[in-house]
Picture 1: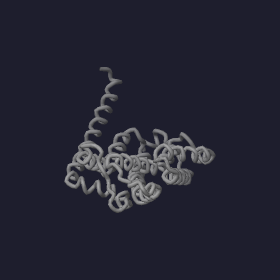
Picture 2 (picture 1 turned 180 degrees about the vertical axis):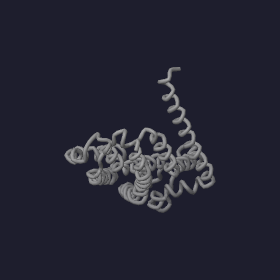
Picture 3 (picture 1 turned 30 degrees about the horizontal axis):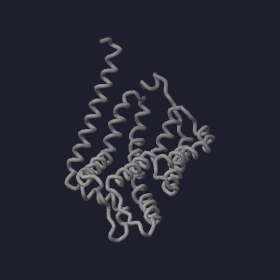
Picture 4 (picture 1 turned 90 degrees about the horizontal axis):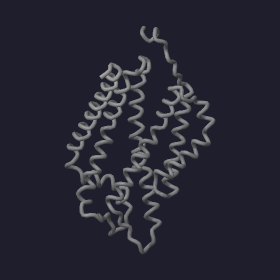
Length: 247
């Protein structure tokens, strides 16, 4: 093996170790939460169950769904709880390649990323879910009793959780683009019409086919983009030379 290949192999080994640490944390959290799997699923499904008509409830169309669906919910929630560890391992992996002044930005960016991801999930659960489920159920014909399948509901809920969680990371992504020098805040401001169209296109792809959920995702994405551009006007790359960095 040549000397040039050794650093690459070392990076692969480090990546493997950090992925294993992350997986172990997720599994440990999952093991602690498994006894409460049914309660966790009931909590996730409460925005829909609270709006079902009297006498209606959720059903399982597959034999294994009543057993597997709560466990799947718990495992994904364990991953959500472990997001701080996931982001820490990511930043720790790329930290050796950063300048000293750049490393000082890791903590603020990581804390902001965690807060925004959880804020996106909370927005989906407390704002989006009640609105769209109220709309879907109220639009059903009077002779139709709405009884959703538990697995289908979980797939929809997780899709919305991930969509809003990552959508709320837009300010961080915008700041990183500006900070890296790939684009300036002024250039992003001039591309605002394209960004708005892209936000609504993403809302159409990531949410159910209704105007309410699409708008509830697209508008926050656009506003968060504006937040990133606003703060990006004060962000500068400021890459120091080697002598200054050494000092």
